[in-house]
Amino acid sequence: MSDNTRSEALQSQYLTVNLAHEEYGIDILAVREIRGWTPVTRIPQAPHYVLGVLNLRGAIVPVIDMRLRFGLEREAYGTTTVTVIITVAGRNFGVVVDAVSDVLDVTADAIRPVPDMGTTVDTEYLKGLTAAGERMVLLLDVDKLLQPHDAQMLEAALPAASDVKAVA
Image 1: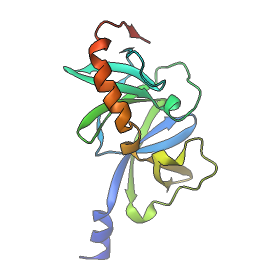
Image 2: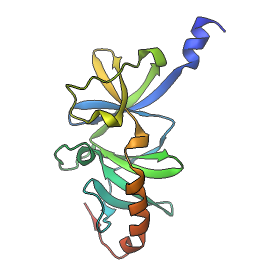
Image 3: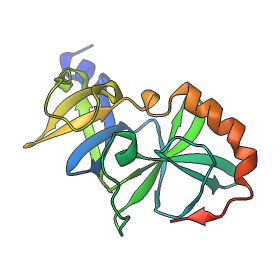
Image 4: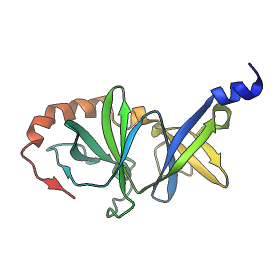
């Protein structure tokens, strides 16, 4: 295998999204769809960053606000606010971000370790960073966004969500 072919084989694509003036990459293989923001149905006693659930063609999908998940201030949702539907370990969930940017091709050797300083996000949710021209893109570890105990709590709370009104 030539060096060029080997490099292409180690290349991944990331959907880049904006959040609080920083750019994040989500592995494109985990992304199922991108939806404009729509109100969700609240779930009683859910963690503060879980906005609620939405009905995605008959499937109930939990939705988390990435700003709240990362300990940032919540901002009013605007015309660029989107929900990115992600599949992790066979489970769909939505993440609300400020905007979607583009798709970025990243080779494995272009991913650098995350330094412990200078980011607004706890590094536990990051698997690395990469340069894209003049900007830096933080690569998210989507497996860590929805913790197993959160998923179990949501499963238990879903029957109660059927009687709760949708919220913006």
